[in-house]
Amino acid sequence: MNSDVKMMIQQSFASQSLMHTLGAEISSLKNGSVDIIAPILESSRQQHGFAHAGLTFSIGDSAAGYAALSTLPAGHEVLTTEMKINLLAPGKGERLIARGKVIKPGRRLIIVQSDVYAIENDIETHVALMTGTMMPLSPK
Amino acid sequence: MNSDVKMMIQQSFASQSLMHTLGAEISSLKNGSVDIIAPILESSRQQHGFAHAGLTFSIGDSAAGYAALSTLPAGHEVLTTEMKINLLAPGKGERLIARGKVIKPGRRLIIVQSDVYAIENDIETHVALMTGTMMPLSPK
Amino acid sequence: MNSDVKMMIQQSFASQSLMHTLGAEISSLKNGSVDIIAPILESSRQQHGFAHAGLTFSIGDSAAGYAALSTLPAGHEVLTTEMKINLLAPGKGERLIARGKVIKPGRRLIIVQSDVYAIENDIETHVALMTGTMMPLSPK
Amino acid sequence: MNSDVKMMIQQSFASQSLMHTLGAEISSLKNGSVDIIAPILESSRQQHGFAHAGLTFSIGDSAAGYAALSTLPAGHEVLTTEMKINLLAPGKGERLIARGKVIKPGRRLIIVQSDVYAIENDIETHVALMTGTMMPLSPK
Image (cartoon, rainbow over all chains, first blue to last red; front, side):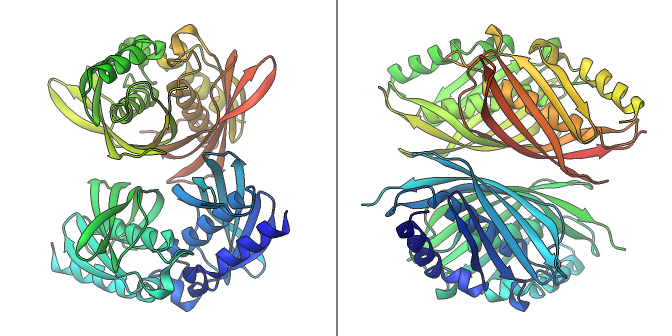
């Protein structure tokens, strides 16, 4: 990937305060696929102590969005226009990893998918399947 | 609504640490409809300073889930099995309010909807339309 | 609604052969909302003799698409980019009616909703809730 | 796969009159994955002569449903409770093939995915990504 695009993604991610609040980090950044990892913090849980679906959604959406952005020239941005999440299992463990990828690139719309896994004692469990649409915005 | 159910919802909400992290509160609690309000905290934002879609999703999902729970006898729980969000406008303003309601009650599945609004200078803007499915869990 | 737009919608609908195969007709056409009605033909059923979800989806998608088109100047077209359907009850009765409406108009994307009802002995049952995204295409 | 389950799926499919109307056939039947193929008939089109999204949805939904059913003991049935379709490209060509598979089996809910391809001169184009939820029904 172009190093300008890489830097743009890292700067954008760093300026998302919710990602910081959730302890999320980009763990892989390739053309068309981005991974985001987050601990299941004491402050990110639902009523049974598992990862809140809001945490799962947040990192899955961001991973998919940056996967889309990684396919565009530097200076672009993307907006999520819609995202569906199917929850497959409780988010139980030490951390979550969201693997976002581009299903179909495009100038007007980019179709994306994210798969989110909970990691407990180094074993991954598939906890969410997400599909969505990103809209590219050209530089002004 | 039954006061046991009301208490059960308030206790469940209080034990969701992510809701506390996001500053969210239940602002209305009726049979089949629940509202959740949250400030757009400095720590809940995306890269342009607006509400992160993860915040929008989190309170919309919780409002819909508690709306579903409000239709069940005390002792039940609900799980989100799927949720789709269409984002309509940027989450710009001081706070968000999610209005969750039950579209179709059921013993096996409950179909729900949440509409999320951004509030800026007392003016509400519709920022998200969410539809999803909740699965009731009987008391053990 | 502009009579050119009205005619454009009726011509477009008439040229969708699947609508003809399913016996579907436009039963109401207003700015931002379009209804489509279809009999539950012997040839449109699932294995229990109820309306096939494919029939429900087809008229719900078309009603939503034409609701979107009704908000655009003559000469435009729309494409469905995504649509989610929640099925609420079996499609039991003589016919289905899909009521499509625009939730959020736009130049780049139009967010739409369709509610589909089964009609049996003049009683309507809500059988599907659909939300989706339409992409306007300018005249060439 | 158990031959009783195979026969049950073929009988169920044969009794879906819409599948017959659309010219659809099961082209592959394995444990957890089912393919359905359909010609793009003159009677299954949208206004530009391509496959109608209703055709794409119908075979994608059925392929996913039978993939779910293939994982259950004989005598069960499944109901689609929700399905989302992202449309990736026009359905242009001679026929469509829907490849349904189970993402997560379960007693209460089965999460499924279908990918639909248009085939033109033996070349496949990915036209739709579908994810959904099937609800198993036990024999009465």
